[in-house]
Picture 1 (cartoon, rainbow, N blue to C red):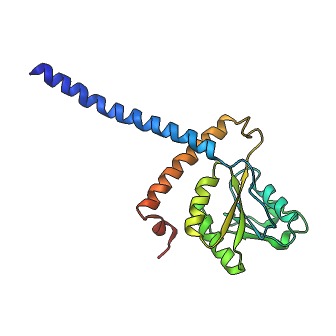
Picture 2 (cartoon, rainbow, N blue to C red):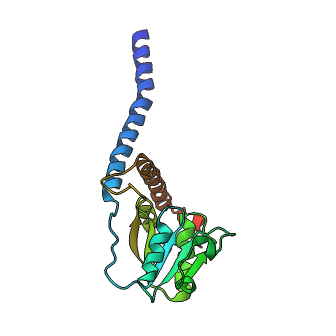
Picture 3 (tube, rainbow, N blue to C red):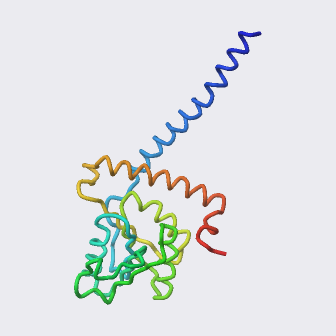
Length: 202
């Protein structure tokens, strides 16, 4: 009897370790799939009507300004700009200042999508290039397609120096792991219907 009880206790102690190990393994496999699925090239195939840049990463503003310079009819929204930041602080190239709008209400990616939806609605914009980091794009697209369905979003991935698919840094992999984890959480929130509450939608 005591022998059976001891074996039962060993099994009970082992179960959490097995479950935790299985979860970590599944997460690691999913992360590999997430990395393999990341867009590596911009999917622009026609004239650009509008550009939306999400602040917070290296190279995003430069990419947005470049797109605006080569598309004279386009307009640019920089979403998530701090309250005290001016256009001059962002070093907007001369000649395009009048086509750059600063969005100051967004504090996260959910806010970016809501702010962009309102901006596009006010200007009659139906299609926009979304500029953000490559690892941030999957979650951004998920949120934009749910919270701003009236905008046809064209992904434009940006990578930092040395972070191309053939020379990715440790920092890049860390950022990818964080974004993958956030994407899992966001999908769960979507499944339980919590995103409307977070975004302030009725």
